Amino acid sequence: MALVDTLLQELEQEAQTTRRVLERVPDAHLGWRPHAKSMTLGQLAMHIALVPGGVAEAAAQPSMQRPLFPQPSPSSASELLPMLEDSIKRARKALEGLDDRALAATWRILDGEREILAMPRVAVLRSIMLNHWYHHRGQLSVYLRQLNVPVPSIYGPSADENPFAQPAAAAAR
Amino acid sequence: MALIDGMLQELEQEAQTTRRVLERVPQAHLAWKPHEKSMSLGQLALHIATVPGNVAQMIAQPSMQRPAFAQPAATKASELLPALENSLKQARAALGAMDDAAITATWKLLDGEREIMAMPRIAALRAIMLNHWYHHRGQMSVYLRQLNVPVPSIYGPSADENPFAQPAAAAAR
Image: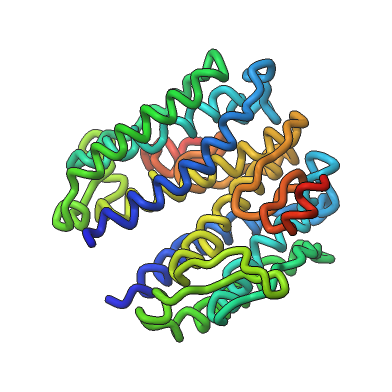
């Protein structure tokens, strides 16, 4: 199995969970933020939708310039799922072009000519495309909770949903 | 390289980041929670500190019974870093004993005799020991923000700290 296959499998599996979270983002609260220094709900949700495609395409290049992190917000929550689907599609395409050699090769973030970061491409995808994605999805779950949106199961039970419960108990709720 | 080596490397690297987050948990606010259905700061922090060791030990077994999710809280913020170090030590010991055959073998989550989940041990470690850990650490970063604690860099700049900044600019702040 090529190295990239594991990443692709995980991407598809975690994308299912990410859909369940993004589909609950309430349109009425896109401008809400838990603190003056936080991203708004809309910014955070759109960032999560764009991470896989944006990062996979950047990582497919030899290097990238230091990102500016502009953090745009969608004008409607209904944009989020289509944005995620497009992003996953772009990620699949960028990743499928990477053989084991390309994945092991060094990728860099530059600030002009100054090197900020250099690591094997596979480590970039692991850390920035995947782990960083889960990090922000975790943040979003705290936003949804505070907006009184029922939180879906992410890796196990939430206070609202328990995928491990007896089927009978789940049906009785 | 054994399959487990990549995972051990990632565990050590992400543990560095987790230390930076847990060391900022403010003692005065351990009981704070952002919503009545949320874990308290002390529960969430202790959960994060104990995930690697607990999950690695669980998954080293052939199967486990559905967990009760007791969620104890740290009584002192100063317990957290030692709890994390102990947990990492347990994780290293459990993982270090797994050869490629053990790591690809099926692990099961059971409820009595009912099978809730069955997957290769390596997939369980990826999802529950690692990805689920990043998820909760992301949640913790929102808690810290709302408590006006400066948030450390996790995968990139936070509103308080930017590891990508020019060294000169960073020194001037």
